[in-house]
Each structure stands twice: as structure tokens, then as C-alpha cells.
Length: 333
Image (cartoon, rainbow, N blue to C red; front, side, top):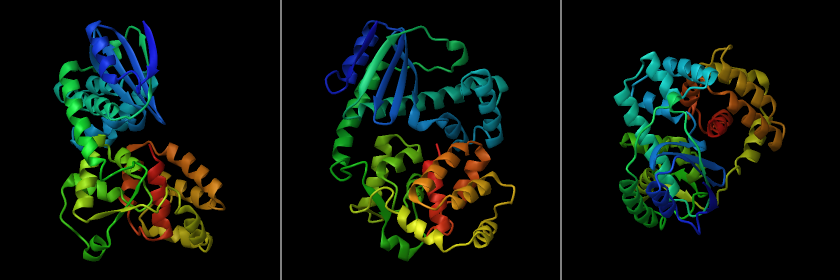
């Protein structure tokens, strides 16, 4: 069976109920703007889900829970790409994580992805019957009816939050109060979101970078806005900082730039240092700068490079170098 349509006329709830009732086996693909989600179904049960906006999130989640190291993740990603196996399967074979722990993370990841789709206000879908090669996958089994009930609750809660956070393209900034008072006591989840707010990233970009599902991200941002720690900058627009950044870079010579990189503790052989240098040299106009940032961001795939980028992000954040680092961070996958 093959079916396609629009989520505005054929609701996801109805679609999943139908596939469950008819015990279908296949893949349901959904698309909204730049986001592509695939939901894998086996005999009417959801067994797996992937999201194009959150590539390698499984590895990141396992690292956040201290279940694997950065070196183990890098090794397994390389094996996964070479042999075509799922990352979870490679981690199991190598013995780096237990099946029980991996299953719990895979289930949580799949649920986050699917719950986010229920919050889409529009989008397209296509379902296609097909058999799955489960040998290279670590699958979970999701109760469809329980999923639908929880999704309905989340939709209602999100509707309330969107009365304050009205658009995912709005730009957020840290309030002057927080900047004056310095260090403030926050929960880890709030600190994670706050670390991403730089006055140029949109709400959508911040939530995507945080790794939280949409509802959790909206709740945290709403709490920060309500407490006065974060403000909504209605006038700001994504990319509006670029002309100012170019003007600041124009007055900096290469020697001063290298000294600034030394001050950050970046070794001369560092891949990240080389990436920033190439971007700096391309900062002659907005188009060349953004093309260089996009190209170099694609190369930041090793866990140690991502960790180093995260380490230096926010250092000298009000300087041209801090803005350049933030720009690179925002474009990394």
C-alpha cells in the first residue's frame, strides 16, 4: 500500500490509528520545511524513528548520560558509516553499552521525534509498505494508543505556551538584569538553553541545538522569559549580526587573529583552529563568509572537535571572535 497527503487534511492521529489497525509494515515519511522525519512500523507497531534535524543524537544522548565516551562514539560512528550498520547496533557489538540502557535511550529518542511531529501545524506525508532489515537496527516497540493520548495532552499544553512564545522565528536575548548580576542559579536544563541564547539565534534554532523535544524546550524558554532572565527581541532577525561582524573583522589583521586563537588555547594543528582561520580569510562579504561557515561546519563531526567548539563558545562572546565562533556553532549539525 502507498498513500500520501497533507497533514492539514489527513491528521497524523488518524493515519497512525489506521496503520496500527491494519497491522502495516513500512515507513511513514513526513516533511515540514527543512525537517524530514521517518517513522518505521512493523506489524502495526512503531519500532523506530529518525529526524533530519537531530543527526547523531543517539550518540549525544548516550554521552550526556555518561554511558559512553567521546572516543567510543567516534570509533562506532566510523564503523557504522563504513559497514552500514545502525550506531546502536555497533555500540552493542563492541560492548560499550548494555542492551537495556540502549533500549531506554532509543525509546526516549523515538518518542521525542514523534511527539514533535504532532506539534506541526502543517506538513506532507507519504507511507509506503516495505519490509525492514532489522539486523542492523536496535528497535523499540511503542504502544500507539498510549502515544496518541500523550500527544493530545502535549498539544493542549503547547497551545498555552505559544500564547507567550508566538513564533519559532523570534529571537531571544539574555536580559540586562542577568548581565549585570553575573552568575545566577539555574537548573541544568535552563543553563543549557541559556548558553545557546546569543541575541541572534531564533527560538527554533535554540531548541534544535539543545536536543530537547519541542514541548520541553518551549517550557524551559517560557520559564526563563517569565522569570525575567530572557527577553524576546522582536526587532532582531536571523543573520542581522553579519554586516556588523564583517565590519569588526575588517579592522583585524591575521597576526592579531592568530594571537586571539592562541589565547583560546587552540593548538596550531587543531582542526577547529584551521576551520576558523579559513572562515576569517573568507570574511570579505556576507555571501563568502556564510559559504565558508557552512562548508567548515560540515567538517566538524569528530566528538573532540565539537567538544572543543562548545568549550570556547561564549569565551569573549562580545568580541568579533566570539561572534565568529557562535556563527560556526549555530551551523554545526
